[in-house]
Amino acid sequence: MAGDQGKRFASSLLFDKAFVNGQWVSAKSGKTFEVTNPATGELLGTVPDMDGSDTRSAIETAHKAFQTWRDVPAKERCTVLRRWSDLCTQNKPELARLLTSEMGKPLKEAEGEVNYGISFIEWFGEEARRAYGDVIPSPTSSKRMLVLRQAIGVCGMITPWNFPNAMITRKACAAIAAGCTVVLKPAEDTPYSALALCELAKQAGLPEGVLNVVTASRANAPSVGKELCENPIVKKISFTGSTNTGKTLLRQSADTVKKASMELGGNAPFIVFDSADVNAAVQGAMASKFRCSGQTCVCANRILVQEGIYDRFVKRLAEVMNEELKVGDGLEPGTTQGPLINKAAVDKVDGLVQDAVKSGAKVVTGGKRHTKGSNFYHPTLLTDVTPKMRCSTEEIFGPVAAIMKFKTEEEALAIANATQFGLAGYFYSGNIGQIWRVSEKLEYGLVGANEGLISATEAPFGGVKESGLGREGGKYGLEEYMEIKYVCMGGI
Ligand code: NAP
Image 1 (cartoon, rainbow, N blue to C red):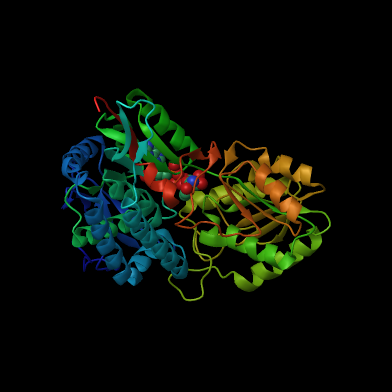
Image 2: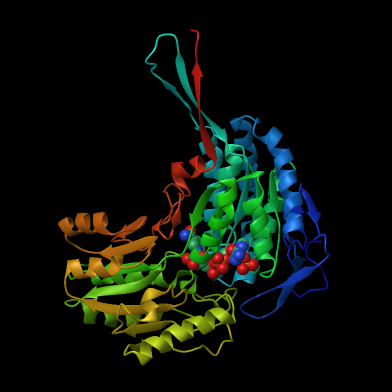
């Protein structure tokens, strides 16, 4: 099944079946769907197009596995996760090549994502051994009061295409470390990284049924999601993706009062104050805006620059964009900007740019589709952007830096917070009082103060407002998959 010789793309970690109960399986319907390389259009292969009925079977498998996995001592769960992370490390080049081939990001970024993914396997294995309970001083001499932390149960997970490796390990490894079992649906565009992780988990000795991956086309995603949300066996739903889909999943989960973690969309402000170091701010903007060709939930979406530094910042950003950004196939050396995920994404980005230009924005560089192919877009710098333009109110999810001018700190904060989203916010300032004030006043779950790259395994990741519920990573990530049980012992 791995590395089908008949296809142009061959990999020892390419699997063309879904993974349920430790076995490679087809959809009950026998249907499959195609996965292509977004840079070249090359067919990578096909995977099963599963639906709600296949998902129900996977949930029952996960439920059976939970009965034993939850009682495996934390130290043993940690050992399995350690072996899994070692195998991922040994297979890092192949995991990265697979990731770039299905998702498009430059190989260097794919290697970075695989490292990030591995770090969650390690981290949660270690954290499992520190899932302490409590002994509470009792108000009564005849009673003793204990708090136990126990695995929630079967967890349903749905992940997006922009981080096909790390979004899987950040969720699934927290759950598995806690003693839960998992049924996960990866995005239609990027199932192969998830399946490769399953193979390495199997080799590491993860018991059958603990991790199950159900693959599905975009047409079948709603029926898989509905089953994960409505099936009473599933005790938790964890989702990363758009706010609209997250709201649908929350509604569907209401009847079973499921616990939910939601990592949803953002609309990150990136504020540059007059007192900022202009070169540092430009480097921060480059990292935050152009990573993954602008397709991350924490990408700077609205760049607000104070009037005294505006011209210098725009000039320097344009220079650095022209010097550093190279558009191409992510597998080609030197590429920093891969394709967008599909043509619909390019159409959306171009629509936002055209809308801004029609409403008075100026194109400093880019502003058009790229000749490399239908999925490529020129890195673009727009100035004279206003808060009402669609590129300010919607998530751009593409390589477009949209810059607007402001006069005062109050004005910048008002613009920055005037959105229903609250995932990441950034600002650059050389004034310590302002750094405190703005850090406190930004209504965001993640704040970068003089820093454009803020995600870390050890830190909590998540949003406020309509950007989500719960936190992933850090010491908080494990808690999302554990229940607190209070035990009161009487008759002492
Ligand atoms: P999306 O359309 O919501 O898709 C995400 C996942 O949900 C995919 O697996 C998708 O399957 C599935 N899905 C879509 N509709 C569904 C339904 N009705 N029922 C069940 N599953 C469904 O999001 P996207 O546009 O691909 O991803 C980009 C979004 O994700 C952006 O808004 C970004 O900000 C957000 N994101 C957030 C974080 C975070 O941590 N906060 C991280 C990364 C991305 P298909 O692939 O088959 O459509």
